[in-house]
Image 1 (cartoon, rainbow, N blue to C red):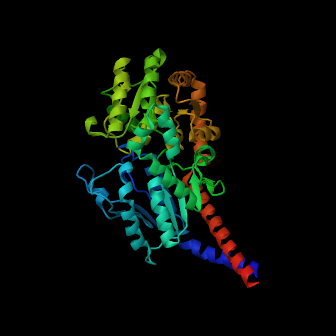
Image 2: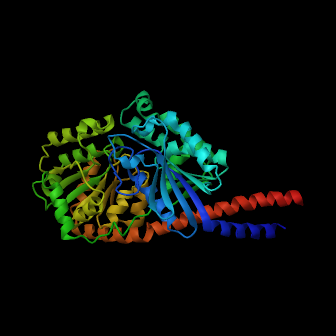
Image 3: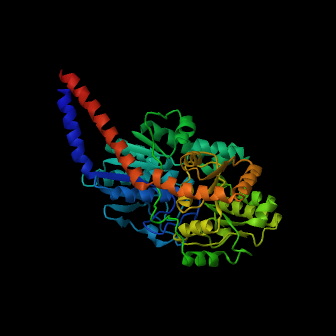
Length: 477
């Protein structure tokens, strides 16, 4: 009897798997289908790009019928009206749905907690309709985890959770920088975040991490974490966009962007691309550069820290980071050696990687903590070697790609030493560049990511249904 039910389960699943429907929850920051404003603020970073790419890649598979990406509707004169559109087409089978919760104006993620229950009620009303009901809910980050748990329970739909970065780890790193527990709680609402993560880890059917390190050393800090639920799937890279063949037109465009800052554009650049937030540790990179006569003589430092109109209009954390950077530039008299342009287009990011590679430069990620490090893969895919923090994901990227050097991000002197090593050996640079291109192609494609993703979901579906059918058959017997 069980074998027949087992066979029926597989057959039913195969039929269902041809019309999977996904609901992805990504609630904070700014997300749209094109021209992501990555780095605009502390909430619009690599997670935003990952979620959008995952949604598009899922929609392009034959097993998936529809993917909804749910985010917040924002009507604020300070940001583009794209973010107020209730529905936005991404591509066939994928769309962004924006729901109103809280005030119209844009809010940083730490201020969204009081309004999440309003969103939950709206989502239950919408997704309980049979024509809208998804097969899976995937919640990204703690705020979406809070919503995802309530929605999953109300609609009896399985939940996938990805933390992207975790509150306990962030709290630990911020305490190391000298901030008090009260300061961290006041600004980051860290207790709400950690509680939401505990609930999401407890209720989720699957927890997806980018690296084994996340699972072993970060998620394991939570009482509700189960290693059996944890599945490691490395993010992918769009190799059509991030390729290693540069053009003279691209080089000229980047030269024009950086010309107002740099005295000698021919020097190898040390390129950093990140948000201007404490965790990214950019002031330490500027200090390491300033302490090194060798680096100041042989290289330029290029900092791409999002887009800004006026620093005074940024949030307090970003203002603090920029002030630290400018103090370091002044302290070490780095004028003419450091570039920090106010604006760039999304299309400039792969161009910057290729431009830096064409001049024998390095990509630098000095973050205090790095759950994965998607920019490291992008840079490597463009042939640009890396010098990166040894925290988190970079360890696994380096182990698979052998594309540069790692260092302890809490030690400015070690960063200085590794940067000097990185620019000193041309034969190693060529090896790292070639290894990076080949390693990303072999280990970090979006096709591979989505195949693994769907395979894990398929296995979980069969496992849960086989178990429930076994219980039924036992009762019948």
